[in-house]
Image 1 (tube, helix red, strand yellow):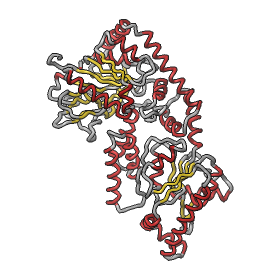
Image 2 (tube, helix red, strand yellow):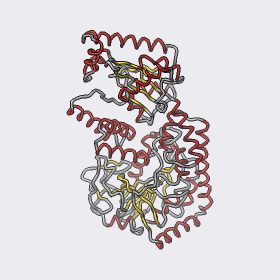
Image 3 (cartoon, one colour):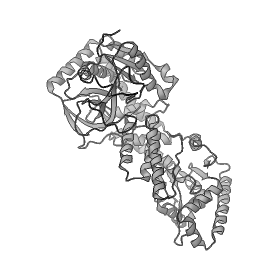
Image 4 (cartoon, helix red, strand yellow):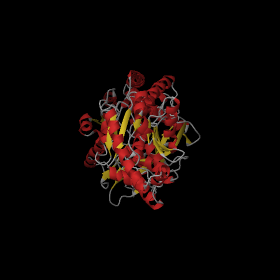
Length: 581
């Protein structure tokens, strides 16, 4: 057993980190962390060899974790943390920190050790430190220079006192009667129940923080996209673009003597371990992976990969990548998905489903979408003239001058198929009685049809019934021997039916579940209640399924664009998607 004093271990996951792990281990040992659990998984570079070389200089427990990963890829990180938590308690450690290899715990004075800080935080069970996102790195630069450009992010990483927490997450810990403290040792202002984010000023350094090297240089950032994701994606699909230099944030300035002493120590570690050549080889590995990314895109990507990569490569200015982005845009723009079923049958849900995945989607557009398609048809133009940049088209209907309804989706689905070969068509419908009732409930919809046709209410209802059966039959007959029709019964099909149908046609989306969005206007109290429910559902999924949370919060933002809390949460979710693997 260890002596009765603070003893702090860091737990980290390492996949292809050979270029970076020496600096990371040295940095944390320099600031007083005593030991390291490193879970190596799915690694194709020389991370294990470098760790073995560092093993002679630092207290490192190297855990080859492919089996643990394969047991449950999506929960691998938290399962690794739990395993180390149990063992650290047995080994007598007092505290445990959970950091990634691109996260550097750093004191503001660049001198205070983690032990100094813990000595002042005896009353705190969970110390949380916000991210300071690094935005001034050059290719393969070391983490710190004399002047560093940082911007604070609300997300935190924690150092926990062992013995009291009952549950841990990637960002925090939970348990009965736990005391939490920030780097000032004061209770932090958490922004949600998950305790993953705190209120923090964006433009000044706290007493201690976690430098997050989520971007590094542009070459390294693009190379990192080839690391894939645990669920098996070839590319990282949870990045929303490279940073833009602006005046936000602050300069973190380090005293020259402190910085020189710090790097003198790092150079000695590299010399003692014979690490200069392995680190140089690892740098070549990162560059080669960057080239591999370029080659893979040239060889061909799926539509979904093209869309997610366009989002991830936003603001990248490397000439090679600009050419790749042009190819990706051409690929993404070619796919066309048309919802050709009925309004009041999940059209808004379908729209938000694709929009949240990065597709350029257009929904109704105030009737202009349908009107433009009709005008183009009458003028002999391609039907999507004026909407060429969109990929997904929903709710294609409008009212004519006499207020009669015109449904371009019903009138022109054959021409759309002929003019845009390879497109996918979604015939969405629901139980006819429920559909009729929903149309009747839509403010003004029935009344406008009665007025424009001169029919009675019963006659309009009968006409709608005929329209319903005739259109379904016409679509199914036309596409009978074609593979590009998806039928979606909103009442009978489960909420993953669309995901499966798209996947069978080569479009594998990130989110499996179709959201349920009510488009029909309702009284203000009803509307508030439903939007609140969507917002709260997003908060519920925040810890366990961030992509679902992000999608739902985007829906809430669409429905309540003036909501400051929703907007703030949406921005936070985007930042976390950038950061989390």
